[in-house]
Length: 312
Image (cartoon, rainbow, N blue to C red; front, side, top):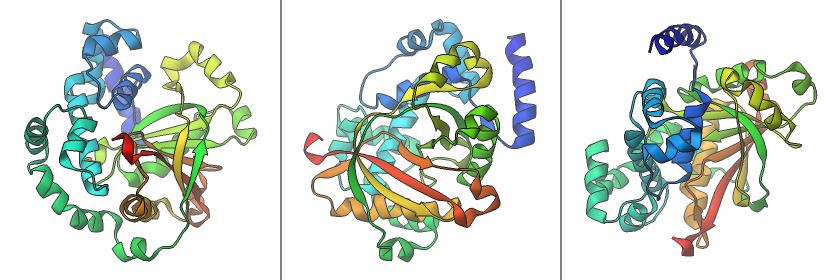
């Protein structure tokens, strides 16, 4: 406990000075396990075994890093996914309840109402007002005719670090992440990959999750993590191969919400064959730090994972 207290003081000092919050990679792994199993039963013991910790130490470290228990994190994550689907998709309440692990519509409604303060139906009816406030100019998204392509995307190996905080802090996240990488790697001009989990109408700003990563094409970076993973906060992983909707964002990251709105509130509504999965959105960059000095030069390819509507 003394070690955790001392570590918290040191970490919070540096995090506050940079206005960044970096999560212990073992807890990041636990969060990823939770985030990848949205409709499956999970216990703290199961997750602790997968990240190499005792259940007691896992529970203590998880609460220290996130401020909640693993059970609460599972519940809130699934309810936030439900809220996003209510916001963006035309699925029935029964379908959404099943997708986020609830056996009955009534159990889902009780849990959702307890967390958000309104029923799922009332939440859905009010989503357009919330969206307009989040993306700013609603008409921009309605009238924007940028093409959306459907393409098969192979799996991508990467290493990443999780950050927490509002979207306005994303340029700082990227600057911190890139600065932490070896110069030799940066000189190779690798592709960078970001993972988007939350939307501001659903998640509190300080709890918004974003993973900054770099593509590990030959797998060599992952092999080196064994020596310094816990001290650096980096975690290796692989994306899922599959069908994606792809759109390009150009310009300041502060306006990327309008690009996501094209996908999530307009394009997807015209699709009879596809809907979104619950996997995070993927952002691909050549240089994510350009947004710090020249925001207009930023180019981001957004990949939204899709699945057949018939599989719901």
